Length: 222
Image (tube, rainbow, N blue to C red; front, side, top):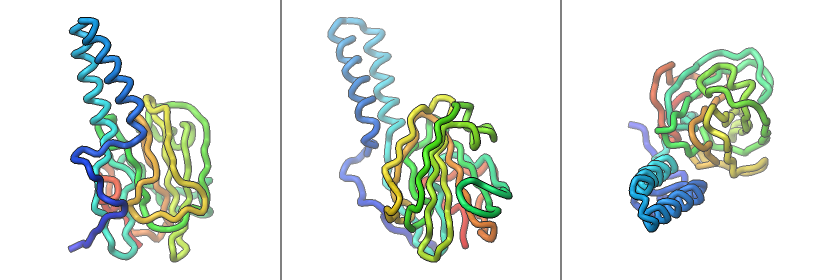
């Protein structure tokens, strides 16, 4: 049986919400209150539903993270849409395996570190906004690439990719920061994708079509 623990302190609320969602929630709630005071019932009810969905979208549940040696966890909630060998990548030298996880608007969008180690590089690339489930999104879309070095010196690349609707990538770490496996490091607002790049000798534990959860689903092991 796989043991697990908390990578971040558990939330003190029953329904934790990511801080990035507060401005959207407050704006929607304010507009809803204005419509209600003005007696515009239809818009007030619609605003209530919109506010509820925004709260749902920015939910940030606590996750128990596997503690076994060599386990790589998913950095995102969603569906595995690609597992492929890549001959070269701009994120680190040599061939590697890429795992792509697509997040719909109904998935939790808080991103977590796939492994423990030191952030060596964070590189933001402006770009286009193709649908994130398309293969060309990895190359052409706006994205933020992070390179982590494990305590054993293994490189792990993970890339936040904006999608057709997503227009805001949030990353709270910088080079030199130490991350625990499963620790929160950012999010992408309103639908997106995460690509994970691992050394070719890594044992892959997922296949296309699998549903995964950030921080708790084991996607690979070395």
